[in-house]
Each structure stands twice: as structure tokens, then as C-alpha cells.
Length: 625
Ligand SMILES: [Zn+2]
Image 1 (cartoon, rainbow, N blue to C red):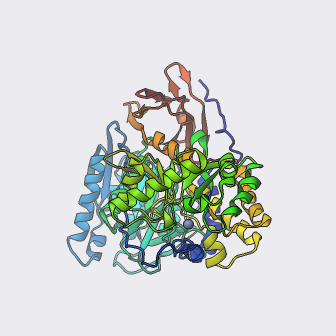
Image 2 (cartoon, helix red, strand yellow; image 1 turned 60 degrees about the horizontal axis):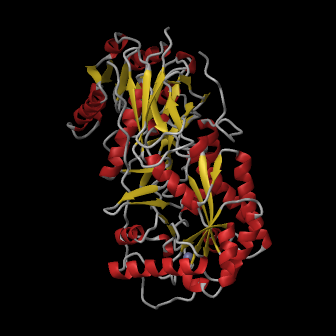
Image 3 (cartoon, rainbow, N blue to C red; image 1 turned 120 degrees about the vertical axis):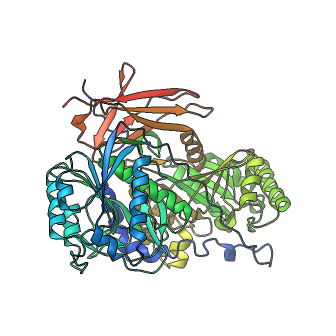
């Protein structure tokens, strides 16, 4: 049986982590400065007649819950934890290191491993070659230990290491990162410098991030963690807005690596220790990274549902807030709909009433959403006021265009629990609003009355580019839009292009937007859609439950169940293989061989339509050696 090698549709260049890092690498220098601008006061109240003089009410930030998929059920396996007595003595608190070892022991046991503890070079030499060796925070190593670890890797033995492995000698004196760099195949290494907060970001397509929302940003306690530059990065140190921090001597600063050596050894490395997250939410995600890395290094298959339909790497929506200079919206509507670009207009309804002639123009060009009645901040207000305001805007829009909106961009991109509840109860589906840059993809809020999707903007809008940064030339605007696109392709996220009617008012500015669309089309792996379609897809995708079970012969069975009420089409799975693809035969669904494509990021499998309540059982058979 031979796997049909079919490219995911419309993809022109094969996606590899190397490509992702190149895209992100270009952003290191350019956008770190700009990141602080993102979410400075981004809306345009000063340009619209203020409806009131009162200060906007304070808003408490609401964070969407992350639902992590079940961990794979594995066949029997064994892992060993290396206890370094010298490293234990390095930490001032004598309880620190033993507690760290305990934590790893319970994580590995939770993954179904039979866990043993070893100590001293001869014990490393004595381990069976195929079993996983975990070395947490082994900072002080003698020459015998170094040689034993090295030999084990040369023999193809899998390894999971953390932090500054071997950066100090047997007396715990500093010797540098050369041993670590050499072992994990990094080009440069150093300590992470900078002020709190400390963030690490996981792009889609890296095995440690399997099951996490693409572009998830985790906050760590601030310490001089380790940063490397390596071709095989899995997670990178970042600023608040998901832009990578620089590695020593330039490039993307990696905080996690998975790397297979020429000898076939799988090596996973984290640039921090383990229990070092800033908050429980972050700790839970940090732990999942550790679990994923251990499973992969130990030779197990991991899988997740690709974020976007039809094998696309990223999604992109062109949206405009139609507010001051309302009639400028005609330019964007006519200019881009000629090119067949899906658009969404978020309309200030009080202003819309003065332009009845534009309702048909905008509706013909795209989706219409609400941007409130009068552009006053809604979040932070009382329930009655929010509900009344939201309903009023919906009624205005229905009267103006004949349609009720699915989407709402709340003024200042701010919302609270009452905003969500009011929008859902009045019949809305999604908000286009801030997620505090916690991930590059939508979040879902489960309310008593139903679900609301929040589509985040984690790229600069035209206001930031033109007003805050003063980049007024269409060339700069184009360059900024393309950089945002590349950022989201790197992360596997949503590029929510956000424009304002009062800022996009010339033919050349429309052309700058059009050329960003062209760049997305040329890339071939970007899903261009209206925001409503993106929200609907995200809900449907979240109804898919994927579980992985390993058979005794180490073949994997992938179960996909649709718990939702509608059929889900164009779903692809992303399967992370621990070994070269020849080890596995093509994925089978009953008698059918599924279309699949192998690339540097793993095996991607195209699913047939999954009907409501349906379960698919896909076998990924392991070939006999
Ligand atoms: Zn606005």
C-alpha cells in the first residue's frame, strides 16, 4: 500500500518549521519596537465626534478557557530520570532539586511510562538504547557524565533535557554553553536578557505545541533562561505581541527545540526548568509542552486537528471599521470586491443612517457587522445599558441593510462578560476584539446561553501604522501589512487586517491593502475569508474531538468524533511522527486509504466530511522492521 502524496490544496511551497523561522526571523528586528504600539490606544475616538465627555469605565480582562485535548493512550514504555547530585547542590534551597525530580516523575508516570531513577555515568551507559532519558536541570556535569550522554546520543538514544545542561563543570564552575549547543545542534546560545514579563510562544506545527491554540503565549517567571538559535526550533521567546526576541548574534531566540540527530536520536530541550510559569493557566500549558516533548522523544505519535480548513497554514480577513468619513468605505468596497476579496464592514449605525445609499454597496461587497450605535465604549457598563445598546445597533443595521449582523467589533476592541452575554442573547455569533495577545487564533467563551467566538487582532492596524508610527506612505503601509501576514503564517494564526474609514481614503492606500491580499494569494496557503465564516469554522472545529491510541505494535489509531450539530468539511489532521515516514504505511479509514502528505512538519491527513455524531477511526499502521 502506497501513500498517495498529495499537496494540501492551494499550497505552493511546502511548509516546514525552517520556513516558519525564516518568516519570523524577518520580524525580529522590525516589529519588536512596533509591538509596544499594538494595543496602545488603538481606536479612533479622537477622530469621531465623542458622544459623551465622561471617562470610559474600567474593564476587567476576560480570558477564554483553553480546552486541551486528551493525551494519547500509549502502549507500555519506560523512561529514566537522571539525578545529578552536583546539580542538586547548585540550588540554594536543598528541597528544590528533589521536588523538580518528583515533578518529572509524576509527569512521566501520568503519560503511562514506567519510570526509573538513575545517577552516575555508568548508569547512563547501562540503559537500553531505545528508552527515554530525561535530565532535568543537569547544570553541573563531570566529564564522565558528559561523555556518557554524548555516546548515548551517538547510539541513537532519545533524550529530554532542560535549561543550562552542562554549563558548569564537576565543581559547578561556569564553563559555558558549548556542550549544550553541540548536543542540541544549535548555532548560538546565551542567557535571555530582559525585563519582566517573560513570554514564550508556540507556533502551529511544532510537536511540543500539539493541541495548544496556535501562537499560544505563555508567561514565565523572569529569570535568565536560556536562548538558542537553531534551525529546529519549536518555541521562541517573545514580546507581548508574539514577536520573537533575538537570539545571541541575531535570528529567532528559541526556548524549546526538538531535533533528530543523524544517528536517529530524538532530542528535546527546554530553555527553562519546569514549574516556572507566572500563573496556573500558563503552568498548565507549560506542562503540556513537557508532556508532548516526552511522548515524542520516547517515540510516540501525536496528532492534532489543523487550525484552518483545507490545509491552509493561516487565515486572513480584511475588515474595516466604518465610522468617521463614513462614505470612504465605498472605495474599499468597490476596489477590493472587484478583486474578489472577502470583506467585513463593522458599521457605526448612527452614522450609517445618514448614508442609506451605501447599505447596498457594502452588503454587496461583504459581510456587515456592528461597531456600536455611537462608538461609545460598551464594556464596563451595566447589563441594561449594554443590552439596550447592542440591540439598538442590531435593529439599526437590520433597518439599514435588511440583515442582522453575526459580528460585533466593540469600540476600543474591549468587552466584558456582559458584552458577551448580551451579544449572544441578542443573536450574535462573534466579537472581533482583543484577546490580550494570548494566542494567534480565536477563542471560544462558553456562556450559560451559548457560545461566543472572539476573533483577535494580534497585528498592527492602520491606525498604529499610520498615526502611531507615522508611516504614511502606501509603500510602508503595504510593507506593514505583508509583515503581519508573514507573522501569522509563521504562527499558523488569524491575520485580522483592521482598517478605518477615516484612514483608508485614497486609491493608493486601497492598492496597499490589495497588494497584501495578493501576497496572501501568492503564498498559496492562506485562507481568505469573511470574519463570519472564520467564526463558524472555529466553532465547528472545536466540536471535533481527536484522541490517539497506540496499539501494542506501536501503530496509532486516531479517533475523530464530531460532537457538534453540523457536518464539518475540509478538515486536515496534523500527525507528528517520531520516526521517518517510511516506518509507517499510509493512513487507512476502513478500506479507504486517506490522502496524506508528508513534509518536514509531519504527516498531514485529509479527512472526509465528518457528520454530526459521527466517529472516524483512522489507522496509521507501523511497518514491521
Ligand atoms: Zn472604531
